[in-house]
Picture 1 (cartoon, rainbow, N blue to C red):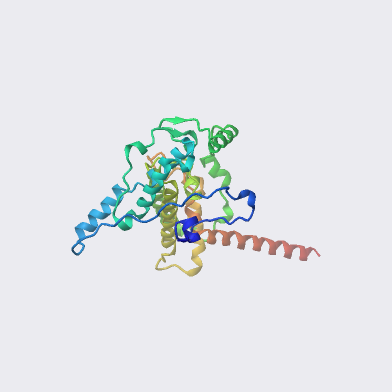
Picture 2: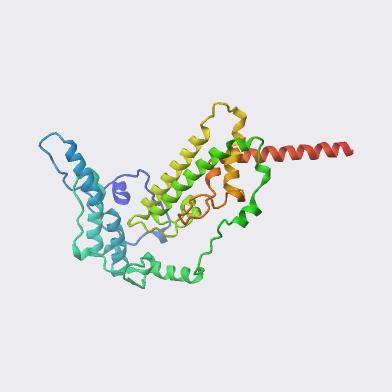
Length: 323
């Protein structure tokens, strides 16, 4: 029986998977390896209607037995250490377990890792300081150490200080009537900073820049799936920003449509003005966060844009009067 090409390269489907097509014969592997059998494990069958208690138990089992990330990491360890790399016997066994773990939410059959396939030490490029590590002799290990030797040993991140607030505050961002929204803006920023700080604490993220950019230097959350963590964090940040925009769009009973820029100005003011530096997250040992007003960045940009256009118009009229 001829195997479909999708089975050969991507486990029978291409739903969002990355693949690479190459016609350069120098890059084509000299031999093909027999593809693994991806037949799923038989699912658990019930002889009665599913009860809510069984659904709860199933959900709990899924949380407890979600070993996909552990298998990923263990496969990487054996692929680094074994002479046959990914073709070694432990890696093939782990690949089969990985297939079972992927289907676990559908079948209810967990992937149980035997003791002999548990990683006892990790290559240095995996950066696990709390585990026993060794110096990897693979290409990845050598590249890792070369890059590490070139990179600075300490990463200096400049914090937003009170002096920085005095030097960077832009009075041009003050729109007539912004004072009317200061109280609400202060309360919303307090809530925003508290939620953002809690999210950072949950994942062990040290700086606001890391969580907003999605480029976390280190995560202390005990998880084995960094990509999954990054997706969860990104979703949580987007949800918080969306919630902040909902706060912004709440209309006061006496507000006018053109007050949105005064409101945005107030959000900027309570974030960047030196009088408000250090007034949030008191007692929580957190930095002064700056992202709050940028949840409505379009309003801030329009404030500056209108000001610049007005300045250009004044310059143009002045030149006309001189001529």
